[in-house]
Amino acid sequence: MSEILRYIDQNSSRFRAEMYDFLRIPSVSAKSEHDSDTRGAAEWLAQRLRDAGLEAELRETPGHPVVLGHWRGAGPDSPTVLIYGHYDVQPPEPLEEWTSPPFEPTERDGRVYARGSADDKGQLYMHVKALEAHLATQGSLPVNVIVLAEGEEEVGSANLVPFVEQNAAELACDAVVISDSNMYAPGMPSVLFSLRGLAYFEIHVRGPRSDLHSGQFGGPVVNPGNALAKIVASLHDADGRVAIEGFYDDVLEWDEETRDQIRSLPFDDTAYKADLKVAALGGEKGWSTLEKLWIRPTCDVNGMLCGYTGEGAKTVLPGKAMAKVSFRLVPSQTPERVKKLLEAHLARVSPPGVTVELVELHGGRPWKAKVEGKLVEAASEALEQAFGTRAVLQGEGGSIPIVVDFEEKLKASALLVGFALPGCNLHAPNEWFPLDAFHKGIGALAILYGKLG
Ligand code: BES
Ligand code: MN
Ligand code: MN
Image 1: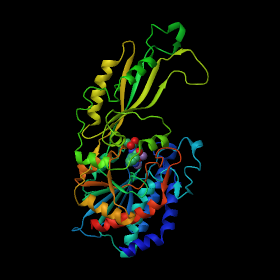
Image 2: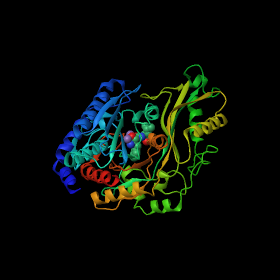
Image 3: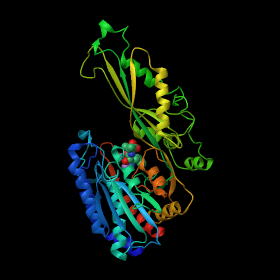
Image 4: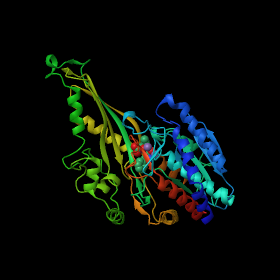
């Protein structure tokens, strides 16, 4: 292993430079104007996999292509590891809030700033370099490897689910390894025990035939803006719980061991508030901040559209209003059930005089890891060797919907080891990735493959 780690040390500046090339490609999956860039990122990645010594190709889907690489030289008696990541990124807007341009990777204070540096191109590329380190020094890998990188994670992975179903035989594996999440804190590597799921909706409220003069019509005419505000307010009770009947029926009561594990992690609400520049925290009464983030479900407004929002005053009674509302789910909630419950709730609270329509955007099931077993053990040891500190178990509030599909369709356990940090500004301006974690993490992954083999 020391030869492999030495190779990683000796090539670290080239690894970084290559990652920056990857980050320069604006693979924004949500925007069709970037379709050729997104494909370009896929082609770039496939070529880097070939350079590392794998076979790789683009596999077409109705949307952005899947990059599929593999190396089967370990033979049928050795385990097969599927490495998953995504080469698409979130739109970079608002551009004026970036200190350096989003697609010009820039180093400052031991970090690289660029869209996709943490989510997920930087982390995905670490796996490519860990594979290269084995192949370049040993001429082989300790396990058979499949690399599956998609270009639609940030837009809901709609085409990946059928892809996995249709290619289940080709994707057959013993474990799925994913680096698309965070370490607990700087110098504190972690393995995930959970991801939350997601159920995302639009609530459309329609009132009179058009916008109206709010003096001439205000009063008798039910205002869609007022109605939407009432609907949104009805989603929580005074204790911060989601006030939809039946919403908590499927919520798992986590075992005391996991809750103890959460309590054992250092966490300071005061520092958390100071960092976010807020005076107080909210959410469900009776749970700690980490519990609220990892093991409790939520309901959040993501956007609202209604009436006049331009400069100055306009006395108008809006004809319609819309809110984007999403729920983060925990085991064993499902997007389907939450949709049914929300429909029933809307039917109950919507005032007469407006119509209310619920539109589902996308969803994903929550994931709970099997934390006892060889996979997590191997990862913890590899992280400890590379970072010099024990890895902790942590939950995660974000979602990677495909994880549950992998486990179900490929009948393999997933292992989530991420190297970003909670402050890395994912999806936000000034996204960054810690360069020391990039370097040490490549070593950790190389050690991990060794242990799995
Ligand atoms: N990598 C993130 C999920 C994530 C964020 C994991 C933070 C761990 C820490 C992923 O790319 C993502 O953004 N997922 C979306 C869901 C998707 C359906 C758009 C999310 O969580 O909002
Ligand atoms: Mn991601
Ligand atoms: Mn993301």
